[in-house]
Image (cartoon, rainbow, N blue to C red; front, side, top):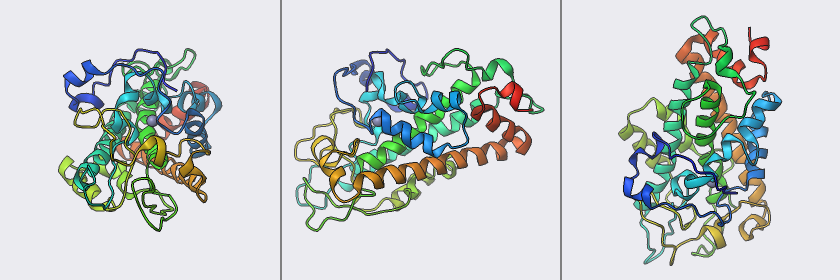
Length: 319
Ligand SMILES: [Zn+2]
């Protein structure tokens, strides 16, 4: 659920969003969540991180305070690309959005996760020294991390970047038709289901993070199926416009699978498929991040960084 916390917008992620838009954003404090509700973000994230110890896992995954739900709080909540919203499209005469516009919103969703991945890799450098010895003050969780996009303890910084990078990916599966059962007569109120059983190929965040912008956009655009859709939600599109959902596939009444009891969730095993594929994707994201740390910083330092992130007392346990 959104909180009343005032959070400074991300310097990095929101750099492309016009200042006028940020000034215009007012927290919609009473609005219901537009995501997998916090509980399912926690379930997905915990199941994807079986090797993490208790306090470290709670900092990442807790349904209320974890890094993975930070994008559902404050002004972040109202920015569509952070939830993969507004990538709606239907092959139908007079549909208000083009395939290209829908793809642009999905690309914006991917772009945010790439930025967060790059930040997380960079911030991990401070977890350990040049020999791979843990920096005690950088890995302490004795006071709670603040998810405020400000530099602080390195462990908190890495968790924040990973959590904010993973949130849109988890949301994608509850907000899109990627895993939904196929539909015989697609319409605005019953969009196609793509019946996919594996994570989306356009969330290969580690690969994309090593590519030039134009190259990964090209790769992602090619990988996005022509009948992929997410739902329209009245938040800000990547263009800075507040979404007008008239005549569009809506998140709220049609596509959302944020809980098991929505109309779309109840069809076949749509909800379970969204959760299981989201879990598989976060498993991939975590594995890819670990591989990147080892490649970037050597096995020795990379393994020490991973130990520091996943262990509650790294000074004692990561030697
Ligand atoms: Zn969300």
